[in-house]
Amino acid sequence: MPTTADMFADVESAEGRANRLEDLKDAFKKSIDRRDTKRDGFITLKEAEQMGVNAGIQRGASVGDSDQAARLLAAAERFASLTKDMSGDDQAAVASELDALNAIKDRFAKDITVASPGNLHPYDLEAPAKILVPRFTPLRNEMPRQKGQGTAREFRRILGYSNTGMGGVPNLTPFFSSESGSTLASGGTTFGALNLVRGQKISYAMDVKTVGYVELSLSDLVSWKSQFSNLGFEDSRQLSQMALLWSHLLGEERAMLYGRGSGSGYEGPVAAPTVTLASVGSASGSGFGATAFVKITAYTGQGESLPSAEATSVVLTPNAPLGITLASQPAGAVAYGVYASTTTNTETFQGFFVPGGGAVNQIVVPNFVSGGAVVPASDGSANANGYDGFLSVLSDPTVSGYFARADVTYQGKTIYNTTAANQIGDQPWQDAFQSLYTSVYADPEETWVNAVNRRALANFLRSASNTSAAYRIQLSEDGANGATVGAAVTGLVNQTSPTDRVVRLRVHPYMPTGASFIRSVTLPIPDSHIAETTVATNVQDYMSVDWTPIQFSYDASTYQLGTVVHYAPKWSGAIYGLS
Image 1 (tube, rainbow, N blue to C red):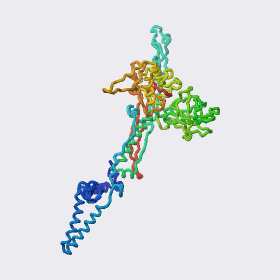
Image 2 (cartoon, one colour; image 1 turned 135 degrees about the vertical axis):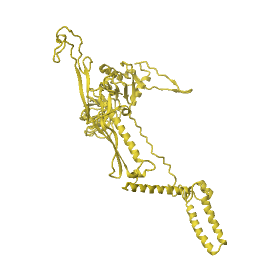
Image 3 (cartoon, helix red, strand yellow; image 1 turned 45 degrees about the vertical axis):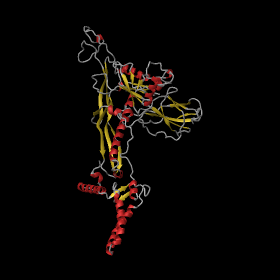
Image 4 (cartoon, one colour; image 1 turned 180 degrees about the horizontal axis):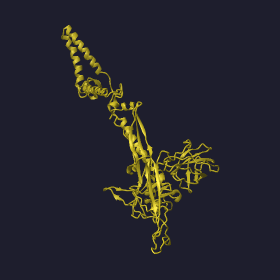
C-alpha cells in the first residue's frame, strides 16, 4: 500500500503530509455525503420512462429516488396555476421561485445518454490486472541453500585411496609376512622414521576446488505518473516488486540449469567447431544454390561461441538440403547455430540444430532462410560474471561421471521409431546408469529431459514393433461409461542399481533440445560429509533494494552474492544429441 510519503512527495514534513491526508479524507467524505444525502444520482431508463424525463446522470437525483424529478416538475406546474389568485407582489415572488425551479427542470431535461455525449456510462474494468506468466523453478526450490562468506568458496575432496579403485590410486595387496624381517621383503615400502615390519602404506588422491562468488541482480522502475494514475485499480509498485522477484528467481533457475561461468574455478568459453559442407538428399526447392558459405557457433544455453572459420562449397546440388559435417563437437556445446549465405562473409542465422539423422556429426539444414541475424561478433558461450549450472559441469568429461553424445553413439536411431531396428528407447540412460555404477557405484535418483523426449519414451512403450522388452499398458475404468487411456513414462528402472531403484523421470521447460542430465542427489557414502551433491551457497541471498528517488520514478533492484557448488559431479552425468 502507498504511504503518505508516496502520495504527497511534494510535502517535506511529516506534519504537512498528515494534514494533506486529512484534506483528502475530508474531500472523500464530502463526496460520499453528497451521494448518501441523495443530491446526486443516476436515473435508469425504466425510471425515466415512468417520470417522463431523460435517463442518465442527474445532479440532485439519486438512484432509487425516482419521484424527486417528477415532484419538481409537478411543483413547477402548480406554481404556474397559483399565480391566477395572487396579488401582484405575491405573483412576483412566486415567479422568481418558478424561474429557479424551471432552471432545475432544464438541467434534468438534458439529453445525457450512452451515445451522447458518450463515455459517461460505467466502465466495467476488472481489477487488478491478470497475470498470465508461468513460473517454474524446481531446481531452485529443491536445492539446499547454505551460508557463505568472503569472496570465494574453497573445499577439499578425497577422491580415492588404496583399494577403492578410484582417484587413480593403485590397489595394494594386504598380504605380508611378519617374520621376514623387512617391510620391503613383503613388497612394502619404507615410510616414517623407522623401517618396521608392517603392511604396505596406503596412498591417497585429493584435490582442492575454489569457486568465486558472483553477483546476480535485476532492476525495474515505476514512473510516478503510472503509480498515481493506477491507484484504485492496481498498485503498480507492488506489481513491479512481484514481477522483479519472479524474474530474478526464474533467471536463477536458468542459471542453475545451464549457466556457464568464465571466472576463477568455472568451465569457461566453448570453442567453435570446424566444418565441411555437402549436399544431402535430392533437390527440394530449399533455396541453397550451387555455392554456399557457412559459419557455425557452439550454443551452450548460456549463449553462442565465436563463429568457426567460413566453410565454402562450390559443388552443391542447387535447391538440395545442406549437409554440415562437424569435424569435432566441443565439450559443452548443446546445439549449433548455423549461419549461411550465397555470398562470402554475409552469413545470416538459419537456426539452432542438433546433429543426428544422417552421417556421424552431421547437421542437415533443409531450407535457406534470408534476413536473419548476423554472426555474433563476440563470445557469449560463457559469462565472466556467471557460475556453472548442471549442464555445463556434467557435459565436461574431465569432471563429470558420464557424458555421451547420442547422435554419435546411436547414429541413425531415435528414441522412438516405427521400426524397432531404428529406435534406441531408454538405452542411452541405461548405458549411463551402468557407467556411473561401474566407476563410482553411483545410484542416481533422477534424470531430467525436455517434454519432447519424455513423450518419445511414451511412444516407445506403445510401439507395436518394440521388441526390446515386454511392456504392458493397463486400461483403467473411469466410471460406468468411460475409461482412462494413455501411457506416460514417470520413471526408468535402473538395470544396474544395487537397490533396484526406479529413477524418476522429470521434465524441465528450459531444457535445451536433445539434452538430458542424470543426477545423484545424495551419495551412497554415509560418512561423505556431503548432505546433497549440489548446493546453492550465498554470502547474501536474495534481497530487494528500493532506491532513493532521484527522478520521477520508483526504482527497485534485486541483489544476490553467491554461487552453486557441485561437490560430487562424478556421481552424475549428461547425454546430448537425443532425437
